[in-house]
Image 1 (tube, rainbow, N blue to C red):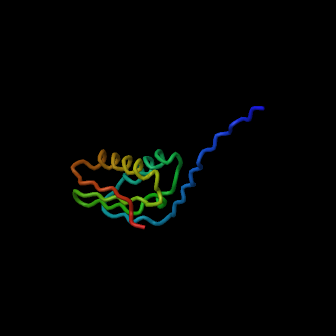
Image 2: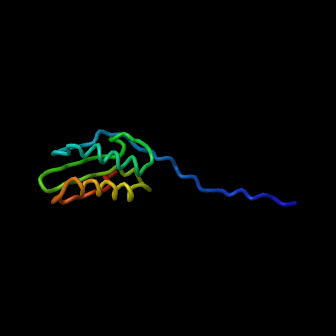
Image 3: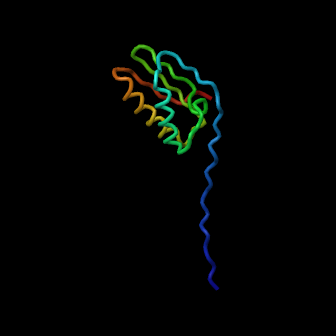
Length: 102
């Protein structure tokens, strides 16, 4: 008698994001929508801004973006995608993208 083998795959834990009001300062005109589109594309779903963004400060020649640490396994890809948006939109600007502290 032959038994069929059923492959077992490790389940990925659902993405548990805490929605918080992000801190935004400076002149991020148009950036928030573009950043949100990039994040949604990386996550494969639409998420509220407060679920992925903790802070965005654009002042002079410096931009600092802090992402939600709960992004975990998506953090490297989301970091790259958001950095690419900022680099494209903010020429001659020092750009820092990081995970926010817990």
